[in-house]
Amino acid sequence: MQISARQLAAGTIIDVAGDIDLAHSPAMRKALLGEIKEKKTPKVFLNLRNVRYIDSSGIASLVEGLKASRDIGSRLILFALNPAVREVMELSRLQKIFEIYDSEEQALAA
Amino acid sequence: MLIETVARTHSPKSQKRTAAADARLRSEHFLTLQLESNPEALCLVRATLERATEVMEFPEADSRAVVRSVDEALANVIRHAYKGRSGKPIEVQCWRLWKTNDAEHPKGIEILLKDSGAAADPKKLKGRALEEVRPGGLGIHFMKQSMDVVEFHRKSGKNLLRMVKYLAPQKPEAVAQGE
Image 1: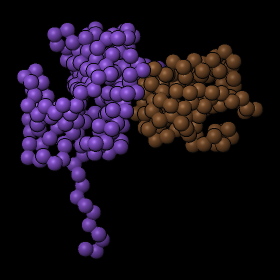
Image 2: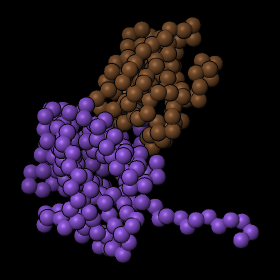
Image 3: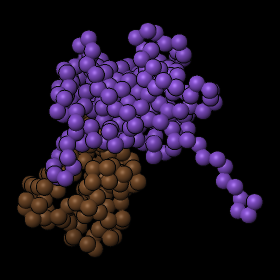
Image 4: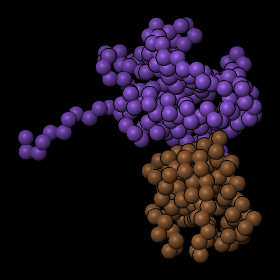
């Protein structure tokens, strides 16, 4: 899995590529919480376009990130979920809990 | 990871229960994976099962369901049964299920997972309500949502998990309108 970050005027975009599973979800959790809790970035965007698979540990990391962002009054915004990732969000009944957009443009405009 | 693909239609006595579980189905050994409790191995199991279910002509969504369930089950074994310790043995057996009178179209896949870790906590095997938004406890829910059968057993110091996914009945070819 690869993780990188882009700083924009609107906030920080974290680009993730690969599978978010038991082996790799700790790295995404660290990146997410670092941006939210340590840097206190007001808007954190998570680009999931190149994520083919996410397991329950990945979902748990996203929920943790969401809770952390709510605690400090910032926003965690997800975008470009592929069908497999969207399916897991639906199985978790979290698709309405998270802010989710189809594209980067839509997410940045939110 | 060791991969074994020897066909065993006449299964050893200890494995006969897999066929007996569905009275009108017979099971045929398809694949056995022997791996260690290393999270890095999970991607290899996912890739293998993705291909195996593709060979069995599972629709994509059902293939993802099988892959997801086995991945979540293995993650639970690593995290809970072996408490994160690497190098511990896990076996994943895959069996093709056939109707006794149909040798052409497999009816489904049966997966058996075996580990020698700590016994699972029965309370945790029930999963949790999803109304509460919090991290954790979703793996069992994913497995139960994704598979037709999910059964946990503890026998001779081993955890045994049996999961079955049936193939949806094949639809007859669409008849052209007006015919």
